[in-house]
Image (cartoon, rainbow, N blue to C red):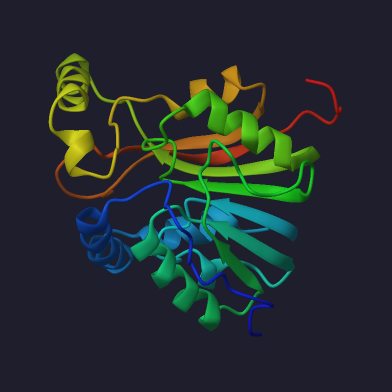
Length: 229
């Protein structure tokens, strides 16, 4: 099925502009799907979803081919122009309707309580304001709606955590599109008022060297089923 529409990506000013990193990420992410098992992670992340879904930080659209057919629409937000162009191309190949649009996680260009689920995948590491972004996630979800998340962050022993903190204070964010290694996505979701469901810690790659980026978490959270915060 062709998408209902796909955003052109033509905006006067992009909220994120990392053209060199975008090109690097586009290559590495495709290799990770085939060589590091990321395609299987995407399947587990999205399994069982239905209704209207908002995906934040869609990147080059590699999740789109894994959405189940019970999903009636995906609205995919991607702030970086080069990645957004690639996401539009991926949307045209998707079997579910996908609309790609520019926007930032901290100010989502969609209506409140409009979605049955929100997908965040390797996003919280790079947003400028995590509490504000998760506040926006809560705003756009219907009461009882689900958050599916796959994020990397803080992990390992004292030496690894020291390394993560040191990289975050120096070269890592400017070289990697604003990414941070030492954030705690599970704690951030709890602090934002989400109810944590099942989640599991995973290493990426599952086999091979353990890197500062290896410590990931895959799971589900819910907006509480009442409209009040």
